[in-house]
Length: 362
Image (cartoon, rainbow, N blue to C red; front, side):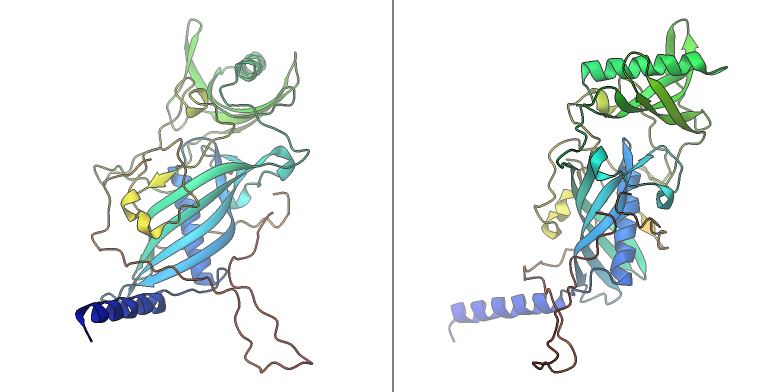
């Protein structure tokens, strides 16, 4: 056999070995769901604006074992997330948050996440997300978050709120969403320090804050859900040190909602692009990239949401794995598993779907 033939044969053998080494468990298996929930909580921790997201479906899973380190595996997950009605500053546990129903313009996140599992501990090392509205016939449409008339309505609503509250004045933190239907908005407020006619939101973890819904036209009805502590879902770590840092409290004029024409707040788009060989192009996002913290170790499985109703959307840091990623060889996703009993005409074999997994909401 000549040199070229040997090279081709070795290449084919290497490809076959790589395919054998890629494990494809069921999307709804306990091990995969644990990894998906770790990814869900990590993505929420990087998301400093808008609303929390909850796992809706596990689309695909590949597990790459490390040949020289049998206790180390790399998980490559594709997951779908749905926006809830809990703002990222709201300390309400994610399991108690309600998924925004379709008719109120649901927002979904499509994310590819790479995790490393060493000694039973899952660590997120890279992710890539895109966030988009789940548009449907008859659903509410959203205004851009920098819409002039919409922001004027929010300001009128804030003034009314301050006129009916006693001993405290609130300042606008950010606009959560604004409906194109007349007079329907959500915005976040925080206790303010006022000097003359200028009020500034207090950047204090004990300051009162909340999310308000305003409905109406000339005389809006304002209802607010107040919470008094700043949420810390996981301990964020500064990219240049190991000291925990709190997420920055956005302020009026400095938040993303007043800089762009998006109709909703997007998840952080990209983290650790040097590991992009593990990530598909499907979830690429080109806008609203926010710097994120290094990977975090999560040793316990986060609590899964308890909702069952059908009505419950480029940055990198210095952290990197020293290990060279295993080469990914594309192969078709197995969509069925054979039944153990032999098939016959009386009892035909029914294929069992293993991926994607079940839909939790819609």
